[in-house]
Length: 399
Image (cartoon, rainbow, N blue to C red; front, side, top):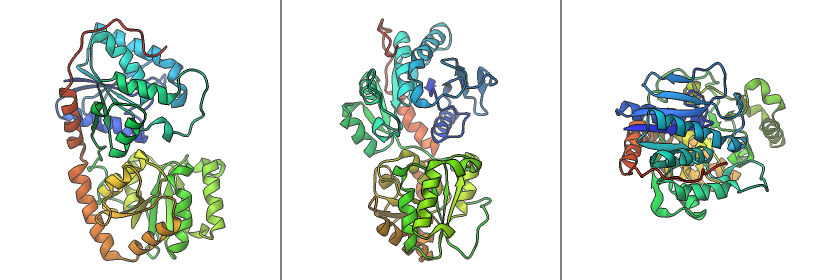
C-alpha cells in the first residue's frame, strides 16, 4: 500500500515528541512492506528535497512559506500552498492509496489535496486546541472550529486514548468516525540494558521529563519533594542547558524549589537529544509525571520509562491512567495534590521490592502492548478499511 504521511511541522528527521512518533510509525509501516512517503515543510535550505531513510521511507520537503523554522501556530496561512504542492505531485506522479495527517494544520492541507485525487484521509490530532498554550485570535475560524470541521471531513480519526476520544466527541466529531490506536515505544532504543547517567548512589533519584509549562505539574512535584526526604528530583526538558538561566519556566521552578526548601535536591538538566533519553531513565529509581490534564507527551514519557524498566508515579488523568496500571506498573494519585503525590513517591522510594515488581511489570507491558510493529499493524488495518473516492471538484479547505 502507498501511504502518504503529512506532518508539516514535525519532520521524522527531527528530535521532538511528534517528530519521533511520525518517524517510528513510518518506519514500522515500511518494515511491514508498505511504500511510505512523509511530506513535511522545508525549514532548511541545506536539506535535500527528498531524503531516503535507512528503512526505505522517503521524506519529502515541501516549500510552503519561508524556508526557515516557523512556530506551528503561525503555519496556517501557508497550508493552502502546501496543499497545492501535494495535489500537483500526486496528480502527475506517485499517488498514495491513503493519506495520514498528523496535527490539525497538516489535516487541512491533506484534505484539500486528497480531494483532488480521490484518496481517503486519516487524521491524528495528537492534541486539541484546549490543551495548547497559545494566544487566541479573533480573526477567522478558531482552531477548535477547524478541528471540528476537519474531524467531520476526513474518513477516519485515529485517537490514542479513551480520554482523547471523549475530547473529540465533546467538540462535535461523531463517535463512529473514531478509532483508538495507542502510541508505541521503541523497545530497541528504550531498554533496561545500556549506559546510565552518573548519580550519587546514596541518594534516591526521581526523574521527571517534559516541557517546562505549568500544566505539566512540575511545581507540584517540587512541593511533593518536601515529603520525600533524602531523595533528589531531576527534571529533563525545556530549552538547552545554556538557555535555562533566562527561561521563565526554569526561573519559576527554581523559585519554588527555594520557597519549599528543596533547592539542594532539585536539578534542571534542560533539553536532551531523544537518543540520550534512555541513559537518563536508567539513572532513575522512578519516574514522576504529574500533569493537571491529559498530556499525550507525558504518556509517551511514561512509556519510554516503562520500556527502560522504570516504575511510574503519576496523576490519574487522561492517557496516563490508561498507560500506567495502578498498583501493577506504578501508582496513580489525584492531580494537583502535592501531599498525595509526595506520599506515593516516599512509599515507593522506600520499598525496593515493590519498585522491582513494578519495574518488571512495566517492562513487560511496554514490550507487549506498545510495540511499534503492533501499532503499525493496527493502523494498517484502519487504512485497509477505507475506500478510494471519485475525485471531486471542491473548494480548498484552506485559503
